Image (tube, rainbow, N blue to C red; front, side, top):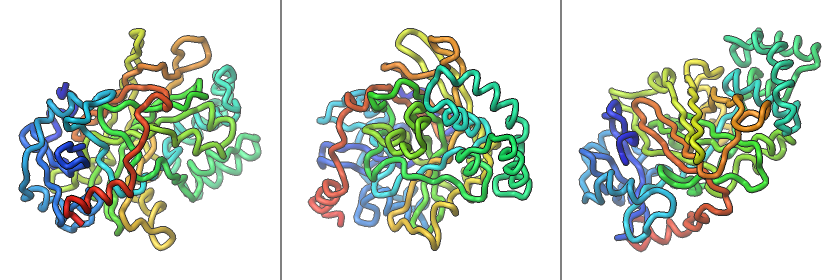
Length: 385
């Protein structure tokens, strides 16, 4: 069960959240020798509060607490619909806002242009992909977003009639930053991820997710699946909320790896992500995303998200975007990839472990019921506030 949850390369400092039936609420945990240790305290009642500490890594190393259970046992109860009388994994995020950056890689940027030109119709995608790639594919290679060179490319594409709102945020001066999901709505390792029932063209988006505190300091990183409905967003960019934010449509985990002397932002900049989708019919899709090909530096994306123009007093989690954009046909020729109910999605990266989820309809995933008010009442009852 846990062989690919925390890989053999991930010997760092990990923190997360577990539903703890002993307290009828979430516990902040750290991973030690295959066990999850409850380090919830008045000094760090939430992960958000923990990441506010200047000494977060040292605090976690020295924190004492009871063992809730082994990672193997808790992970074994974290898939599908867990037994709520036993501990199970939660997303490693609580009070933080959940933000995401889009079209930060040239390949995925081109796919967004194709979605737009196809108006969300997968039947038209193959022909449009060939036309668009011929015109703009090579011109975007190694292009730095917001540079004078990108402005020249923009002028050329306008002359060709190929400029797009997605190219604007992909190579223009301003990054796309949107709210992926409400506070506390993300699902974690093992949980079902949801597709809106109206969608027939959709895909996973494997991404690095940064954990950023209220001061704009990057405190750690984890993995995320920015579940995407290509047909919905392709009809209109104004439907981004419907395409991105549905019940169980945001998966984060398995744990946040805190930055320390062994792992930091340069490791994120050079990270390689692997994606594997295993279908109920035996179909297998393998994909990759390389952070070295991102068009904007992760720190630049953080600065686009917060600063004097926007504050996040409880911090935020930031999806950095993906290189991965599936184009190979799954069933119907020229219609590319789309999910089937029951797909198992695994996103992995050395040093961060593996995030694993199963695809369902959002209407069939467990409904989101534990929000901010429930968390505050629970923490108060436990004497943690």
